[in-house]
Image (cartoon, rainbow, N blue to C red; front, side, top):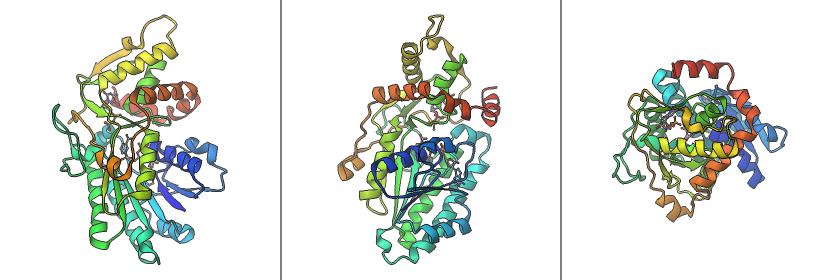
Amino acid sequence: MILVTGGAGFIGSNFILDWLATCDEPVVNLDALTYAGNLHNLASIKDDPRYTFVHGDIGDTALIADLFGKHQPRAIINFAAESHVDRSIHGPEDFIQTNIVGTFRLLEATRAYWSSLVDRAAFRFLHISTDEVFGTLGATDPAFSEITQYQPNSPYSASKAASDHLVRAYHHTYGLPVLTTNCSNNYGPYHFPEKLIPLVIHNALEGRSLPIYGDGQQIRDWLYVKDHCSAIRRVLEAGTPGETYNVGGWNERANLDVVHVLCDILDELAPKSDGASYRKQITFVTDRPGHDRRYAIDARKIEVELGWRPVETFESGIRKTVRWYLDNAEWVRGVTSGSYRNWVEKQYA
Ligand code: NAD
Ligand code: TYD
């Protein structure tokens, strides 16, 4: 049995769906169901006897202790986090609370449970982190490796960096068998339309403007979410406790190029009735404060040591993603009501 936290979010729900599709080991999903958590993502497995959902917070020590006692997991995969940079700029408090305090409380509860196990060496605490902890790169700098210095620039990345340090310290100090993955930007099904790729697809189809921050030349290293999930499974299976693994897609793209690709695929798959290109909806808007210029992941360690490589290219993954959004308009409608609209009005006012 494994315990997944934040399994109703974008990556966590893809992970649980893939996990149950590839093995029979049961999963407990602990999720606080913030605006980003959505049980519709997991509707196809809600009655699966291998799946249990628990509504709760990673910072609720008593609840976690109870879950450990009841389910006796052999591993925890910690996806739970506040994850959106722009929201962290408007209101960092929730990021400190969940990403730092929440991770700390989860580690404490885990340490107590782990200390009671007979086979302590077999247990794993896998912490899901981001490449944003490394800060920003210049155009010709080498990509982030596992030994690149942490230099987080946003409240989001600073809070993730703090959680990574706590996870590291619990290994160094107490011997807790932890693993950390630092992954680049993901995209794919169930991605909440506040992040660049799903926001652009959604706005394009709604006839709204496609907001590009600053000059649109910021670079991200895009990875299809199912490839991230396979990397996590591989690290859980074969990673060395105490080690960190960078995960990336070898797919550096400038934001404006990504938006052009999305417009071109939409022009082909969902042409506008007036024959105009979706590119016409592109609008340059005020830049994000402190906007990191470039992220790039050197993913050689996970390839050489664990034999993992992504399966999708950017071209194949982005096409699948656009198709998914076209085929799942109902899901998009469900997540873009209420509080979503308030956020969009505030952010793009
Ligand atoms: P997401 O925002 O889509 O989902 C986060 C989930 O965590 C939601 O279901 C939410 O309800 C839950 N959650 C939030 N606070 C909680 C709490 N206190 N207790 C329990 N559950 C809580 O995020 P995501 O994009 O799926 O990211 C998952 C993890 O992967 C995060 O740790 C993020 O930092 C990391 N990551 C994301 C990306 C990316 O491109 N999205 C890239 C690298 C790493
Ligand atoms: P985002 O998806 O928020 O991920 P992150 O900030 O974690 O990398 O943004 C990806 C890139 O796209 C980032 O450089 C900011 C930019 N961006 C825009 O240009 N316009 C938008 O409306 C959004 C949401 C992001």
